[in-house]
Image (cartoon, rainbow, N blue to C red):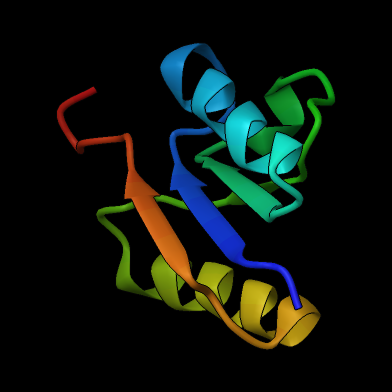
Length: 82
Protein backbone atom coordinates (compact mmCIF):
# COMPACT_ATOMS: atom_id res chain seq x y z
CA UNK A 1 0.00 0.00 0.00
CA UNK A 2 1.44 3.36 -1.00
CA UNK A 3 1.84 6.37 1.26
CA UNK A 4 -0.82 9.08 1.16
CA UNK A 5 0.36 12.70 1.15
CA UNK A 6 -1.74 15.82 1.82
CA UNK A 7 -0.23 19.18 0.81
CA UNK A 8 -1.82 22.44 1.91
CA UNK A 9 -1.49 25.17 -0.68
CA UNK A 10 -0.89 22.60 -3.40
CA UNK A 11 -2.64 24.40 -6.22
CA UNK A 12 0.33 26.34 -7.58
CA UNK A 13 3.93 27.37 -7.04
CA UNK A 14 6.04 25.47 -4.52
CA UNK A 15 3.11 23.40 -3.22
CA UNK A 16 2.28 22.11 -6.69
CA UNK A 17 5.95 21.38 -7.40
CA UNK A 18 6.40 19.59 -4.07
CA UNK A 19 3.49 17.30 -4.96
CA UNK A 20 5.17 16.00 -8.07
CA UNK A 21 8.05 14.32 -6.21
CA UNK A 22 6.02 11.85 -4.11
CA UNK A 23 4.00 10.94 -7.20
CA UNK A 24 7.26 9.89 -8.89
CA UNK A 25 7.91 7.65 -5.87
CA UNK A 26 4.52 5.95 -6.25
CA UNK A 27 2.71 7.84 -3.50
CA UNK A 28 -0.86 9.12 -3.68
CA UNK A 29 -0.96 12.93 -3.38
CA UNK A 30 -3.79 15.32 -2.59
CA UNK A 31 -3.29 19.07 -2.80
CA UNK A 32 -5.51 21.72 -1.29
CA UNK A 33 -6.73 25.19 -2.13
CA UNK A 34 -9.40 27.48 -0.78
CA UNK A 35 -10.83 27.54 -4.32
CA UNK A 36 -9.65 24.45 -6.22
CA UNK A 37 -12.01 25.11 -9.15
CA UNK A 38 -9.97 28.22 -9.96
CA UNK A 39 -6.93 26.13 -10.95
CA UNK A 40 -6.11 23.96 -13.94
CA UNK A 41 -5.83 20.24 -13.44
CA UNK A 42 -2.54 19.08 -12.00
CA UNK A 43 -0.98 15.65 -11.56
CA UNK A 44 -2.93 15.20 -8.33
CA UNK A 45 -6.44 16.08 -7.17
CA UNK A 46 -7.11 19.38 -5.40
CA UNK A 47 -9.47 19.47 -2.44
CA UNK A 48 -11.13 22.53 -0.92
CA UNK A 49 -9.44 23.59 2.33
CA UNK A 50 -9.26 26.81 4.33
CA UNK A 51 -6.65 26.23 7.05
CA UNK A 52 -8.40 28.78 9.31
CA UNK A 53 -11.77 26.98 9.21
CA UNK A 54 -12.17 23.92 11.45
CA UNK A 55 -15.13 22.62 9.42
CA UNK A 56 -13.17 22.91 6.19
CA UNK A 57 -10.24 21.05 7.75
CA UNK A 58 -12.49 18.25 9.01
CA UNK A 59 -14.21 17.87 5.63
CA UNK A 60 -10.90 17.75 3.75
CA UNK A 61 -9.41 15.14 6.07
CA UNK A 62 -12.60 13.07 5.94
CA UNK A 63 -12.50 13.11 2.13
CA UNK A 64 -8.93 11.78 2.02
CA UNK A 65 -9.65 9.13 4.68
CA UNK A 66 -12.80 8.06 2.83
CA UNK A 67 -10.90 7.69 -0.46
CA UNK A 68 -7.60 6.26 0.81
CA UNK A 69 -8.23 5.07 4.38
CA UNK A 70 -5.33 7.05 5.85
CA UNK A 71 -3.02 10.04 5.65
CA UNK A 72 0.68 9.28 6.11
CA UNK A 73 2.27 12.67 5.46
CA UNK A 74 1.01 16.25 5.78
CA UNK A 75 3.04 19.05 4.23
CA UNK A 76 1.90 22.45 5.47
CA UNK A 77 2.81 24.76 2.63
CA UNK A 78 0.19 27.40 3.36
CA UNK A 79 -0.14 29.85 6.19
CA UNK A 80 -3.18 31.94 6.92
CA UNK A 81 -1.51 35.27 6.16
CA UNK A 82 -1.25 34.54 2.42
